[in-house]
Length: 283
Image (cartoon, rainbow, N blue to C red; front, side, top):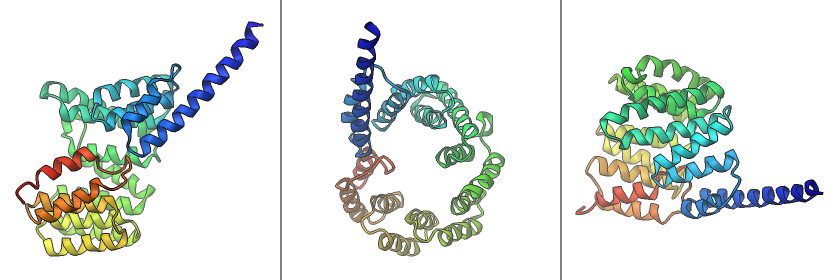
């Protein structure tokens, strides 16, 4: 008799958990991370996906320590899930950025290990592959970085997505101060993906860094025409202006418009935009 009483109770709990997860996921996608957490933390028997979404919310809120704790639990519960390892690597990467020099190296090493594990489990996970590429590109050799590793991975990226592969090669060329070749790759990436506004933004940012401001402005205008009022265009253009100390009033207007836009977790955070906005003071 007890068995027949327990099974409906478990089923009801699972259904409630599923409903709460769907509400939490919707709130997460709307960048309401605090509200999303309220639903998730109230779930008693948390499934791996719920643990991971809790981690993602904490990550987006800037609490990388708590994020990594929950991603660790998700990985322990579902050790073959590449997505969880990728997010765990991201959390350790954020911790490395914020840590003192004595602990940063350990966090950076765990970042690499988890990115590599994610790619090992799912070589077609483009987000994990791209993050591992960025690690190899930026990190020193003594913690596992290096241009040789980045170059090898760029070939794999090109197999997954030719346009993204050109972008990766452009990043490597920039590191080697081969700016002409870098620009060629960026323009070829645009040609391969003419409707992807991100490829246009990549070229505009590159031109701004090279001091070719008129060309950069024209390229940002092309991005705006391709995706009118797209938040990523507003943010990237404002960031380029601020980085070069020019058009600060326009940068302020762009960031204010950005902050009023409906954002997704894929967009730069509002906290990052507000930090940039403070840099426009006096512009």
